[in-house]
Image (tube, rainbow, N blue to C red; front, side, top):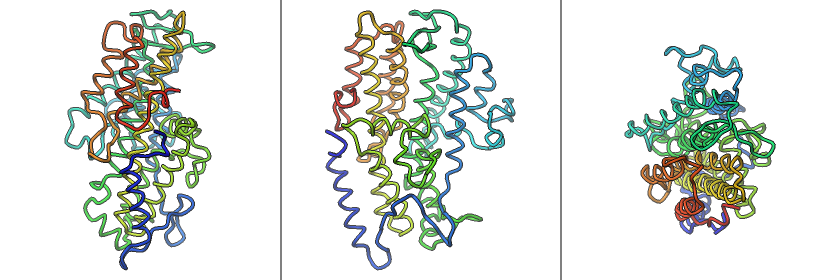
Length: 409
């Protein structure tokens, strides 16, 4: 089923939005979404997501550091993730002076959502450690073998057409694991399981303050408005035109924005970017209008659509990897690059959100099983079969209303 044929319950939600928007009681103004993501109070913008922009930029520099064989150090790479100089890190890990002066951190917001991890510290800690392990392995295992030909059981370089990839002994590009893993563990988790959740939006006096139009101290926005904007920032925080970013979707960063653009570019799913943008706009307008039913309905739409993005790209890369391995002889460089991206998206499945259940579409056990099937046995990617990749792909697609053929092409 294509994105246009969204689940029946989601369509029902959208119908309720239309009714609610036109039929609010006297104390709640009707909700009209603006043409752009632009909201003003007393002549000043109320939209702010600078922290999200900073973390996207920090993550971008981290990925660059993991590919800098000539200059990168483990201390600097880990500090880009942690930004905790008090614990002995590099005082100025970033090229950007603004980022070096920032108190923000990628690590502190990784697997840190209120809904999924506030009472699940053990898993949250393990996830953070996964990223530090991948960063460490890139510096300590792959970098020393920069000029070694990779083989089963040996880290090193491998050709991918005109490109050179650098892989672990099991074929994994650690930089891709970090890059694509952060799409789920940082961006998606903070959006779907933190800022769009009622525990954060309605925290303390947020609802009463929003009803009264009481802004946060020294700010132009109410706290509830700001929380919604922070979710928006993890998708559009580095956009050249964040008030109207859809025309440039996929070109603004190497994280969720890029891959929403990739899904948008597939004819099977065309229109999804506009649907996501429209839901963000209407939800934010609903907060201004104090219509929390419409707000929460838009959070449902966003959880559904953005979870699908992760699942679609996971299946896409697993199927592309299968195609590379199926060539005669196998195109290992091409296949391992696709599978490394697929690995990161599979890892990110843990942070998806099923609006019907409130839980992830995938349990920890399910995701761990997928990961183990990819790299946990023998020589990892070197030993993968088409049957294994199809099995994982089918298991992912079965949770959604798209087929492996639609996502994999």
